[in-house]
Length: 150
Image (cartoon, rainbow, N blue to C red; front, side):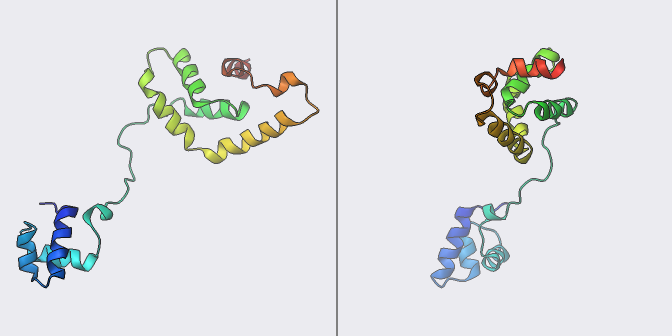
């Protein structure tokens, strides 16, 4: 049986009142005195002991195409995750659903250094006074994707 944070609070409150471990366990509806001893020694609630997951819960649906998307980001660092996802749905009809856009955004955001360095370089070039106004404007993502594939 798993002990909740509320039960641990009750156990600690009872122990602070001077009650024995057996009495604290009974008040918190916990079966064992050893459970009270365990949480006294730990000094943490059960919710604080949960380790973050180190494994994937689902298969990576973008594994086949992610190297292509990375290459597109190198060529056009201002591309957004939504643009990449729309390009994927055009290239592979039926493979990706609209509900996977959030997964694309999540995966895209895991590469902040990769994207920020290129984006900052792009912004510097965009704001330099030597360039004409047309090149300073951010073109639509479709145009950038098509330029990449030409």
